[in-house]
Amino acid sequence: MLLIDISNVITDTPSKRAFGLVEEESTIERVESELKRADDDRRIKAIVLRINSPGGGVTASDVLYSDLVRFKRKHDVPVVAALGDLAASGGYYVACAADRIVAHPTTVTGSIGVILMNLNLEGLLAKVGVRNETFKAGVHKDLLSPFRGATPEERRIVQTILDSLHARFVSVVRENRPRLDEARVAELTDGRIFDASQALGAGLVDEIGDLPAAIAAAEEAAGVTEARVVMYHRSDETRENIYSAAFGLPAQVNILPLDLGALAGGGARFMYLWAPGLGE
Figure 1 (cartoon, rainbow, N blue to C red):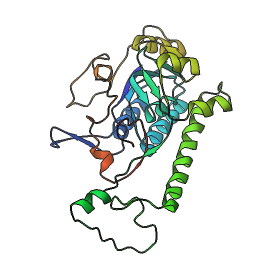
Figure 2: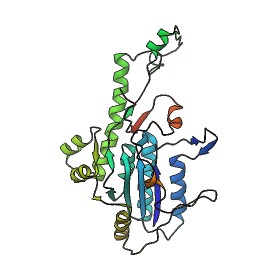
Figure 3: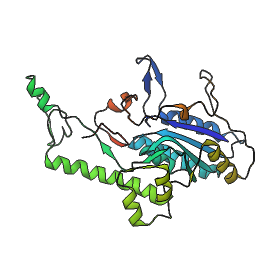
């Protein structure tokens, strides 16, 4: 049985640590590398996704979800999601690829929605006597510029995209939680968060339990007993046991301490991300 960690912000670009001196592969690169190894590993009878993430990029979350769905269909192996401290927004989006979702008793999940965060520096620049001059061809070419406020028309343009991406998230929930009726899905996908008990009552998760409970659920689904749980490592990585990685991290409810460099490099981005304190 393969244990895959999905932790921190979900991105498709490398992140940096140690004051930018060390570059780590993106979530997508790492998980796709592990799935590629599992392609040739006939011993893998099930996958457990250990998720501790506030979500991340819209495309990164969708790519990860699609990769997992494609793998389980190709190999006909069950996938069980074990939710840790936080499995919100894109973290829950990825969990929807699982056949069964097990939430830890202290899990926070939900935040089914999409967000775009942008700075408006116009007032600040005016106070210090700095004026922006932008030359453009195309009336909306500087859409979401941090140097001016958005016009009503620009707000409508952005909202249309937000609504479309939200509809995609809702469709993933609807497809993978078929027991929820339309009215209930609409109620649960307004961006609110849930604790484990609320998520179970709402039908967003299937069980409340710890990592061993998720492993047991995967064993049952695969029709095996006393399965050996493995984690893939590169030769230069520290080898951890199954309890020493994502579930040992702080809850990261406030994502300010996280490395958001990969997200900030391209300016405003559409995110499946729970970002308390970073909105209005």
